[in-house]
Figure 1 (cartoon, rainbow, N blue to C red):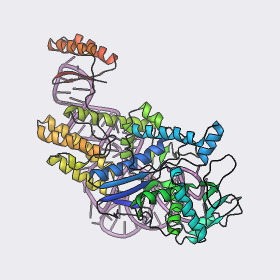
Figure 2 (figure 1 turned 120 degrees about the vertical axis):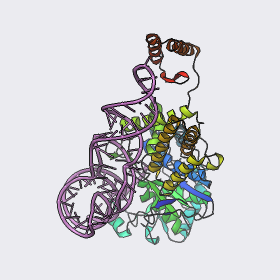
Figure 3 (figure 1 turned 180 degrees about the vertical axis):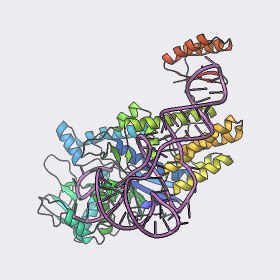
Figure 4 (figure 1 turned 60 degrees about the horizontal axis):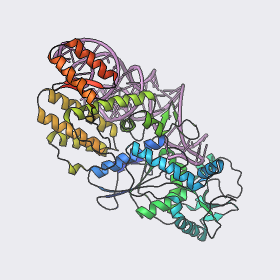
Length: 462
RNA sequence: GGCGGCGUGGCCGAGUGGUUAGGCAGGGGCCUGCAAAGCCCUCCACCCCGGUUCGAAUCCGGGCGCCGCCUCCA
């Protein structure tokens, strides 16, 4: 079984499954009030990769990722633009799924919306009020974190130190600055849901704890998200679960952030770049390759140069697919290793990739192995060892399929005009009329084709 | 102030007490009519100072520099 870093125990340890052969994982999804940025792209790619790989190995993975469709940011945007909150959320949720499709992130098995679980959240909060773990103020209901024995365990901070570091707040109704809102009572013109403790809307932290437990049940296996969610979001989710007597996530995994320049890309720094922008301006697969080539817990740098670097890498991978006419795998569907026939060389590759993946999802090592196999496949083919070459090459395609990276082989249609130019060039070459052959090649290149000579003659692609 | 992380070759980015990471870029060669693609070879490295060790980029101590969380944030 895979070994993953667990933020709760602060060590790499085996992912223990509640039910043999089945993995239950929850990833905190987006609040849909703006276009997805590169940071969203990274976390979705990282956890999509884990999901895909576990499935690839034959595990039955239930993958849940929420949509937060009610929140201050959504309300503010709706107010500014004179629209309803539902309208804002719907627009950006659509943009979200479009972006996910573009970068090849598979749909989760469940995509709970916060607004569909308000009743359950109200029930949870009622319980806290009933047993004194929460208290109501004029504008909110707060969880009293002093009632949670090991509050701070996930973020590795003692309650005292958190208290010392807390910013001073104006709200004097809170018993402790660390207490967080479970419920925000409605202000005029704000959307609200009925509750015995005052109509209003749920706090962010309450949404995820309710939805993850509702869909995955007590003691589900794995809870994932970005490092910056560790505190307060995940800590507060966990606090509620503990306070309510639930067995919560058994393993917590966090991914590193995206750096633009030398700084974290984030909302507060206002330097985030749209994911849509990236996928429209370059091969969307480049971002997945970029993400795979660094460890999920390390920060990654995204810049035109690092994207261009990844694009070059993709060209090499696609070159293998062309040479060996490999099938296009992955994309919206999940691959299973057992669905593919692997020869000895590919089996060996798979075993070695599995070993590094089980070591805290070491995708950079996996990618390195894949590139080595790629070179070996070409080299074997050059030596005339066709069977080994084909075995390795198909292994590369299958492994990358398991990691969610699809290779693009021969690029489809060649129009009649182009086909005529190609034929004319081959005839000129046959007659050793190099000047004419070169002229025709220039013409093809000018029309946007990449021209390569093969044993079979001129080959063009876009 | 509390907690945590990082500093690797031209660039990106792994890694581990002794053995090639990998990619991109550069140089040379093979192949090719010439290219392209591909293959082979190759240059460039572990922030600084001590220490432990037969041996440290890898462990320990100190220093310098950088980043993050502690507030909405993936």
